[in-house]
Length: 290
Image 1: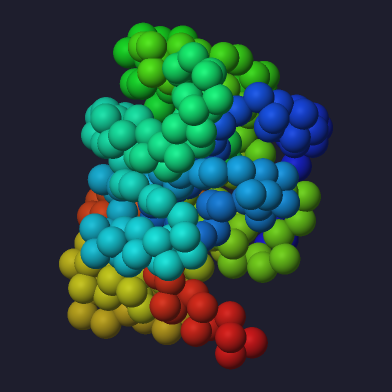
Image 2: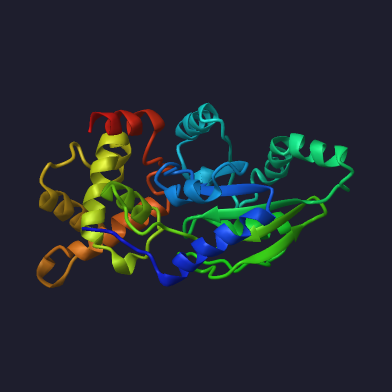
């Protein structure tokens, strides 16, 4: 399965982000805490260049806490401040403004020395589709300003939003990049909901997901589907899950499409508990060996 998704409005959004960059003091880069590396758009590095940034690891409640700590340390080593948040529940909202003020402390001190009156921090929020940008904005603004949705591609335009007197936010549509060099990145984006399911082969995605769980969280997989051992044969595994969960067609045959939908739904709804699909050390060891 080759995963690509680059709607026209994303190309336009990239141009708009580039044009508005000079208007902001800092970039809030929103990533999915479950896939902190794969959910970072490499085009963003090219676009924002040396503009100060704060990485927000959203949906941290759905991610493995120990893995999240590793990712925060990883970004720190790169000279990038990162904090874990949960925009849905409003966790970590105060830390965002505090971190932005710390990052921009020297810049605003220089402006003050030049006689420039104090003003609100201007921030641009960028991130891939379905990362939770609109939910974050609504939490920070404490009212429903930005459109939200459970499917990627809800925000299609830019808007300025005031957050009290201390910050102004520029919302931007989610932007994916034109081509995934690594199809595993596409798989991780798909399993976490960043790509529309209608564009995917859910059976292939399920096989990928189960093999990941078998390697990273074997006990959870076995407990969830009452397995003593995980079958190497995919058909045998699908048959077992299908019969266990009642994903059957006429004549008692297993409906593999329903099995795939079930597994993906249970992963996304945290039936396996908090999951992180990549860790810094594993990721870079794997890349260096290629």
